[in-house]
Image 1 (cartoon, rainbow, N blue to C red):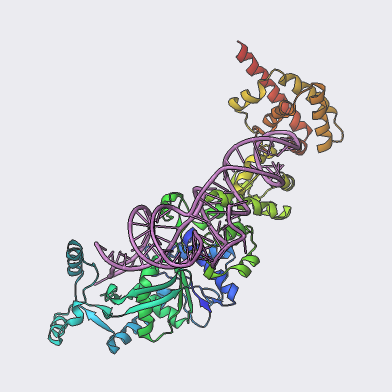
Image 2 (tube, chains in turn purple, red):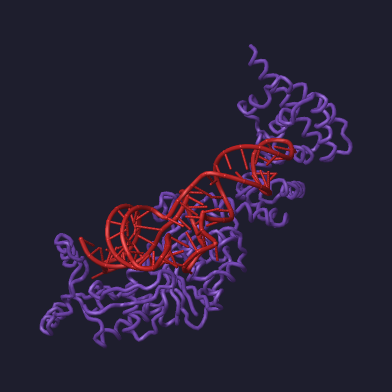
Length: 487
RNA sequence: GCCCCCAUCGACCAGCGGCCUAGGUCACCACCCUUUCAAGGUGGUAACACGGGUUCGAAUCCCGUUGGGGGCACCA
């Protein structure tokens, strides 16, 4: 079995899902996975896009057996470098009489299409150049008129194939027009290019988006006239946005690069995407190995699936919790750097804090980019904004609480999480405060927010001196607020 | 306009004629745990689009309706 998904633009949720299903199918069946780049549309496929596609695929861990960089017996693997092969195939079809020259100009075609629409007929090509007499052809040639090359499709009969995910599809030939395979400037068109490449690369299974479903009979016909064995086809339904419309840029960014930047794990993304159109009765979290083992293309849902960010976020959190601390630390560092918490080259002291913070954030983040906010107080003396302070520090007992605690903390020895915690709990008990009232003020004093990593840990990590400083500052602010409030 | 595809909780999947009083997961709600926020635990709300057949029996098969999507290019 050989499969060759062919990205024709930058990687996003939709085409990565297609790519992943190809990959899973190939790995599951022990087949060969070929990567072919369809880069003939230079307006949307630049050299940077090419690099980005390879980088994204590597990041996702979707490796290919033949294709760019690894190469293989069917090189080149970039469609833009294969045009001679396509043109040669077209010439063969022309010579055999399966294809013919069409001298209609674009203007004529557009006009006839408009007329057909107005008369409620099919807007496709009417086949008139197929019926040209030798004299007419000679006339056009003498004029030096440009021509496209079209394949002739008979009106009688039907094309039938068994789609791997949808099932039996039958199409009447009168629904298919004589479509063009070569432009008047000699450039090969899409249908020709894929069919020729699939044939030459001995692709046996074509798994792609269902936007190509209606065009598949054309390609099957082409394969047949070219003398290729016809591959099996499997068409995947669209991925939908939250509004149930096909996912697109309108729905915000769906590019793989952006998911990476936002702190999604490739493991989670792969798992999640695999479940978009396929699934098992019970399990949701499935490792790459389990996916390969259990994935079956014939189990794929024929109906479109909606891309649900909430479930992705949950799953990403699950995968974060599954990581070893060292692994999570390594992955989260770039996010601390980008958030400005530490420099591009963290100091030893910073590295120690980062490592110590990992277990504190592990159950609290769903995306890596959420980490910095939880531990900001570890690295900087966060600003206390007055609204947060007013909510948390204005209560009557706060100044007393802080003062007593500061006295206790001054004597804590050694300075460990246990002793710090004991000091705070001691004061809380002494003042008969509920946990909420006893500890919330410290969160704000130390981290600037009530949403943060656990405060005993933070206090321990920033040290006695810094800790007392921040409490002092919060105490002053608390008194200041109380003063303004009463006056 | 013509052709094709699709249709189970809000979302993703399970279901391939009786195991269905329709199962799992996310989300949502409640409770428990708890130093904030989470994580974790327990429980709960919630669906076979509609109408006809076929059958002893239908979410599962057939037909139609409705709704959604795609295609009909000298785009890919």
